[in-house]
Length: 123
Image: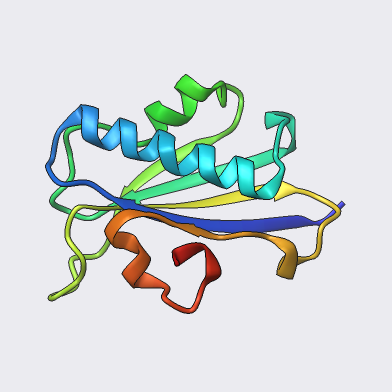
């Protein structure tokens, strides 16, 4: 079974743990729903990044709260690119699936829709 990547991003209005965890949970739930993912056993790993202005919480905590306790999770900081979108949370999920890469639905929510205006999920 192939491993496929699914990308997503969202944003928050302030550097607060409740904001980071709530937005991450919303993003993950939307990715799961749009891709028909129901079994965390199919997840290989997840990488979360935040812009340098977000450090109040690890986004991976939201994944654990959803039940991804056995999925290897990693959090990192995005590089500090001038003029980049502030207060942004990104995720790259690796999943085992028989679906083709073009069937994977990448999800961009809130202000992060600006990152990928070419994606239907960002509309």
